[in-house]
Image 1 (tube, one colour):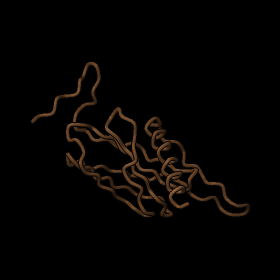
Image 2 (cartoon, helix red, strand yellow):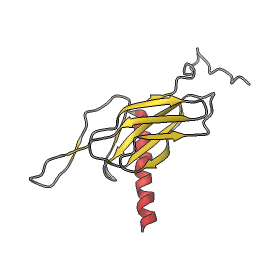
Image 3 (cartoon, rainbow, N blue to C red):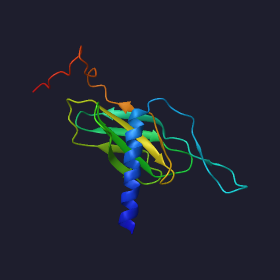
Length: 144
C-alpha cells in the first residue's frame, strides 16, 4: 500500500514537472481549499532559486515557503523532457546533482508539494555554459 502511494505521488510529480517546463510565466500563488471558518493555507512557490554550476555538478539553493513542505527538484538538458532529480524532506533549501555532462546546458525547477493534487513550481533556472543551440547557432562540440 505504501509503495502504491509513493508511485502515485511520483506519477503526479512527473506530470507536474512536465507541465512546469511548458509553463514559463509565473502565476499568482493559489490558496488551498480549507474547512469552513478557517484561514486559507498559503501555497506559495519556492522563491529565490539560485544555481551554482561546477561543470559536472549543479547546486540549487532556494527560500522555501513559510510553512515547510516537501520539495521536488526536476530538470533536464535544454530541449529534453523534465525528469525527477530528487524528492526532498520538508524544509529542504538546497540540492546538489552530480554526473552532469559539462558540455550541455540544463534547466531546473523546484516544486513545493502541498498535496498529491497541488504542487507549485518555482521559475526555471538554467546553466549558462554556452548559447542555446538553434539553426543559426549550433551547439559547439565539446573540447577534449
